[in-house]
Amino acid sequence: MNKYRSLLVNDIRHAVLDPVLMVGILAPLALLLVSRFGFPPAAEWLQASYSFDIRGYSSVIAIFLVATIPMLTGMMTGLLMLDERDENMISYYAVTPLMRRGYMVYRLLLPSLLCILFSTLYLIFSGRSELQGESIYVLVLLAVEAPLFALFLAAFAANKVEGLALAKISGLLIAGPVAVHFVPEPWQFLGAWLPTYWVAKVFFSIDTDGLLTTFLIFGVGLLFHGVLLRIMVNIFVKRTD
Image (tube, rainbow, N blue to C red; front, side):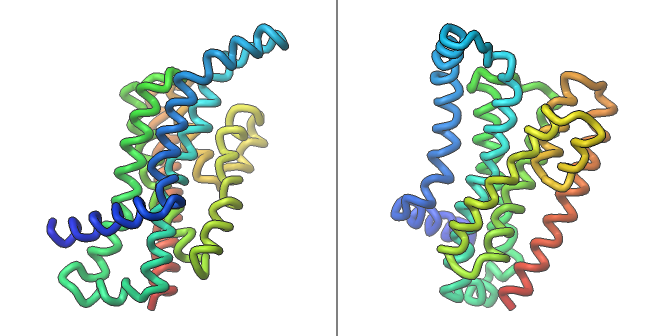
């Protein structure tokens, strides 16, 4: 554990000094606070001013916002990986007791654990959704998306500046919940290539379908996420060799 502790201390130091990295920590908490305390007055204002009841879309708003959490924690980790790649630190870690495998395990677990923490807090305290037993399926998929997004930035961005630009463009990936809720089948399946599509599909299936159907959707989504993660790992390893 000591070899991981030094990396964690170094990450905390970087995050404190870099406001961009702090976004990965502060933004999920901001989403929680806005959903909890900003949504009710906004809903009342829309109802009074435009006779539009946005409370009927609480579940859509919840999954849309919670789907951004792995992107935020993944962005933080991806930018750290870009810094380490530019400074040739990954090669250094490869010849230490940590080794490259230990480095990859740490870098994949950190955003996942942060994502699980923030996503669970959101589902419990946002007031826009409920944490149920089947919610574990949603949390697992979100946990896989965090390192997936981190590797996406680290594998395809040449430097930190490109990483930030790619992170902004990748915001389009959270269109999955919109496709699931607003686009009828079978047309919504066109969005199945988006990881967030499967998160939203499982999320809505918990309330509308049986346990078996939800589990099957989760299984397909997990397989899809696993394949993407493997591809991203291979691309990143080749990029750093």
